[in-house]
Amino acid sequence: MKKKKALYALAALIFLGASLALFIVAADEQSIISSGLPAAQRISLHNFITQGFSRNKHIELADFYFGKQYIYATKLVQFQDVYLPVFADGEPENASNLRILLWIRNDRNSNERLIESEQHLDRFVADFNRRPRSVAGVLRQPTDRVRTLTADAYPGTNGQYLQVLWARDFPAQESINVLWGILTLCLVAAAACAVAYRRQSRICAIFSSDVEKICRRGAESNRR
Image 1 (cartoon, rainbow, N blue to C red):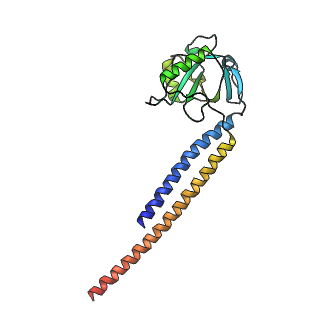
Image 2: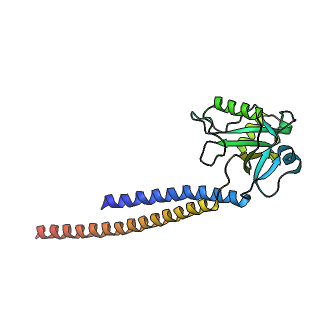
Image 3: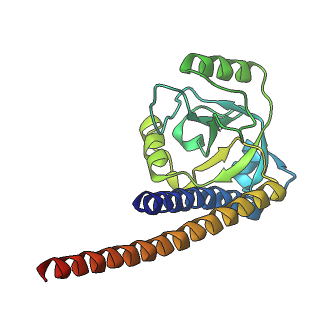
């Protein structure tokens, strides 16, 4: 009985942990949909700097080149992500012209090719600067750490105006609905395990009480 009780408790914790992870992912994806449209707004970096952007944070950025100072929020053995500074064509690579970092992550949502090492990244940047193209993604606010690292790489950068362009595919509502559905199933499973745990606890308590009564009666009989 105690093993069953422990098993139900463990299962409830696993389902609750999965629910929390799913909620974070689904909520983040839903916020992206709320901030933009499926069709990306094409805009040159020069116009982005001078005119800004509309409410659609899903943009296709054009007419730019990559700077030489790459920014890593974390340094791991396996390459995971990088922030690349971008500058408008014809403008020098300096802090006053830095307004956007292109964020490339090695995950299933990325719309850029897999980057496995810093050497691979160097080749990617060199190829891009030789043959420029547009890049689509979703605009986000940089974290405080990214702002600090950017200011270290480009002293004088105005972090207030700095934006991050996350190079990724725009999410579909259907895929997010699937995540919400799985989240609901995990919550139901966690609740079922919690009910089973409480029921098993009652059974254990009743069983322990009966055993105690039997032992007490046996002890009284031995005294007589």
